[in-house]
Image (cartoon, rainbow, N blue to C red; front, side, top):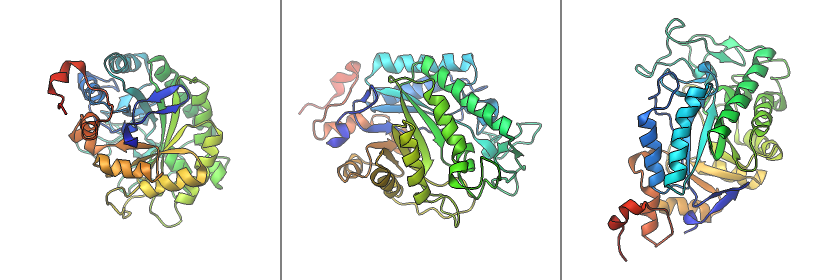
Length: 353
């Protein structure tokens, strides 16, 4: 199966095309990874996934979605993540990445209640424009140009910590209505300065972040960007915008576009069905001529293989399915005798053909 063939980005070879998609676990204290994260990510590496991407990780305290999200704005946080990275490298063939993120106006949420906390309980949210995600939430602080520049620097510092921690892949989170997506969309960004207005200005924040991250990584790390292919809203961000953005990101030495959708506009209808986001990845891949990752209700190796064989994407990002089954990759490989990492400690359980 093509699913079990290797692929290389810069000097990073993934042994197969199966990726554990970044998924928030809401289990950190002060942004620091703990034993749960160690077991959670380590078990997926034992399951044979070619790449594991650590969940959305805040580049500054306000960058977290909730009070229980991971961070990488200080050395204690980076040290805890390095422990996970070292285990994955020493005990599997998986590569490991991290998603660098900022929640923007969708931050300051309580992990316990799933509601935005008061300013006294949480923190001030920020955005390109003073427009809340939901009318019941606080109006976010509108960023000044100086504050935007400081945030770009936060991404650079986070990238340096990620590289020093040994991560193989860095993914910039520009999707799901978080801060970068808020800048991209004309529905959440009504600025009239150099960070608003036309599509190039609205993309400026992301482009500056890409430059900053690229200044810290080498040919021994790959750079991915996750985008929302569409936000399912009239006059909002559409697939045509994603295609043009992806062309610009390719010129900035981005290795892959991880294509998701939605998240920025409250109350829209998303047409959920198996592989519902795959056509978005296909359009970005074929028109922008850049490698893509497909994600969204992909639940079987056969479904993943069809996507790859049809040339719709280059990597398959699994989310809920790999929560249900950490050993998805190795178990899927057994059916056709494909080569996939399997811990030597468990070999007695491997089916004999």
